[in-house]
Image (cartoon, rainbow, N blue to C red; front, side, top):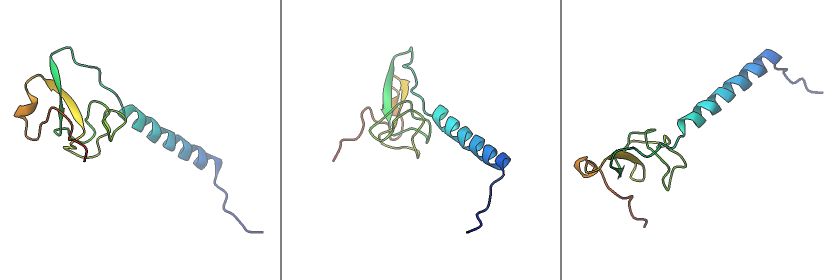
Length: 96
């Protein structure tokens, strides 16, 4: 027989609670922002990491962009503003 270390019940419960907290935090960060009430446009390529408004070809939910200025990540901006921003595009990059 091999001696396997036994994990105290309190430690196992604490580890499970911590894991659940991380899952809940990640899930709450993934949201789809409602459309604004003002005239808007989707602006691609200018989003800060974790601040995209909705899904894209590479993200399932808003708030999931992994790095700044991802070309497929977009954010709502007032109409007419996107092309004034460095890197701002009104459509995602073409595939290929």
